Image (cartoon, rainbow, N blue to C red; front, side, top):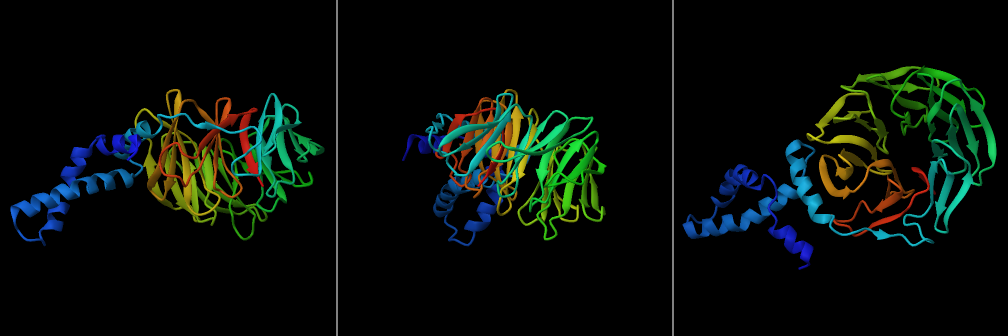
Length: 369
């Protein structure tokens, strides 16, 4: 058994004794069917104790009690340093996009390459054929080589460009509203009042449904006939919105809570952040219904990989996370942490196996094939 395994085996999780007391009636029920000899009953309870403790750790829920146990796991599995990525490699493949004052960079397996100048934000088109970037009051579309294709400008700053699933439109925020422009730069028009969280397109057959925040209200609209499909009130202004790959679950991230909605805007689940922490960002994986949550606590961050309501992995990061995106195949997760990009294998068991870092050139933006 490894040293980490021994430490995990002998460490006591916060609240373990209380959890064991709650599970005691279940243990008694399981052993009543056995012969009623006191020695066998004691032996059965001794055998069940580590099993119940393991189930308590493995079945973590997004509750304040579970947060204490997750903190213990995080402390146990993040004692090693992640492995730096070699300059000529990129786990997960594809093209990783970063943006900032130093310019727009595309990183591939051959290393990083600067393709454009100073920009604020950037987003790949669905198949990585173009990049939409913002620069103050200007929206610019460039090729992967940095060739300018078209641009437009507004009186107010432009933020959060988002390509439609098949690339025929770009949604963005400006001047207190969400706007739509065709992929060739034509027909720029305001759709509705919106602010705050970046707009996101719902993966639906029509490819025309856009979700955005209007104050504390989350709105789903059809961009063709301008119909509002639902408007659900949140407790606070949303920080981030994300649809599952099947378009049937919407993650609404607020500073102190998370809400999970269905495709009709009905609430399915609400979870509150533990005291002393706050939610930073979150998003669904490219396939399935697994999702990622980043929480901040002081100057550090905590990454939670969630399957349904169960937390399957927790990592403690010494720094603030300013971007999250999945690789094209969904087998790697990139995190912008200060001047580095962390690459994490979501499917790996808790620990730092499959965690790598590499230098960042600006803020992490997007990842395309």
